[in-house]
Image (cartoon, rainbow, N blue to C red; front, side, top):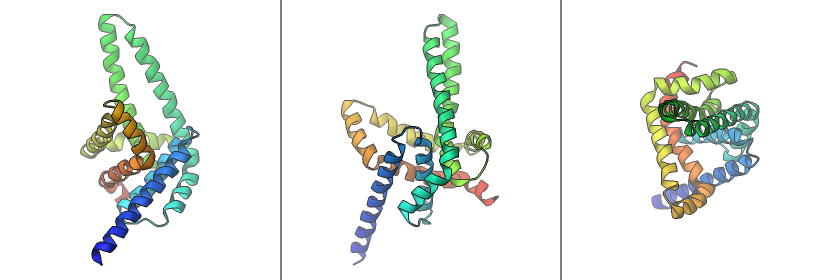
Length: 205
């Protein structure tokens, strides 16, 4: 009987993760709404990680609607910044000698900060209420202050991406896994680390 209950709970959780993954994918298809979709996924997953979840579907859609404006604005800003960094890399590659080396180092540092922003800003939007500027600022400052958590989250996220792009086989397998349940699993894993990272700031609310 106990094993049956555990089996049912595991199957239910897997179904929830697949549902959330599909919701995230569908709501991200316009591309411009990826930010809002990611925020909604984190809003639900952080509650799941804390054993506070309610209705999965309603929770996702409510979070998507309530954070649509701010998350979309942030996502469009990040897209623009990412495009600038990409263009700068192409320009630097054509520079001679030392100038190219210096430019590569500077752009590498800028890219790292950019990745920190991309990874952490949407969980912050999901958990806190603040201005868009302050939210983007905190997405850099909070991970820097809570560096061990930042390092672990970036390591987990980076490892998943590296493993996906090892070769053609992993890319094809990754496409299936990410489309079906991979995004949910990664978000769920990150949510446990995020709860530790954000705990001091949540307690101050």
